[in-house]
Length: 157
Image 1 (spheres, helix red, strand yellow):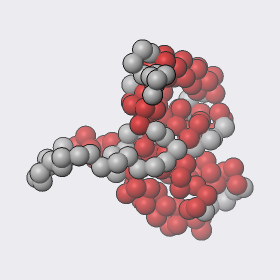
Image 2 (cartoon, rainbow, N blue to C red):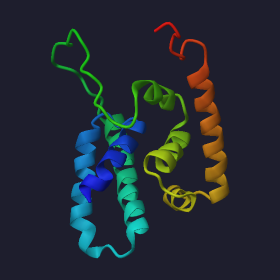
Image 3 (cartoon, rainbow, N blue to C red):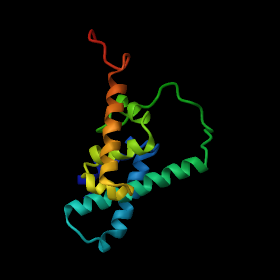
């Protein structure tokens, strides 16, 4: 189960701005392992259930971060660590960060988690129409951000 869902869950976490995505990923699958004996449903329900747990962990991570500012007590490195490889590149992550948190969540659940509209509506407490509308606005905003001058790669390399 971990091998099947972890890459998409990690992408969902990163897409929602979770700073320690791998730590939170571990929390998600610990909760899945603890709760699995009580789970009932088919493969589609399992995927939605895993992402419901991930969504709750995203909310928890943002609450923790807001309530406890981090003070660095170590020297700042001269170079940034390379971005972990995964389904989301740096340009897309930067564009996602410019969306509202609700838009970012819907896009991540629909396209990173690959959940159907109905499941996203249920998870987020919205109607399917509201999710569709939010998805449409978010994708239009992403298109504007990603095609804005300065975001397109130089044709000469």
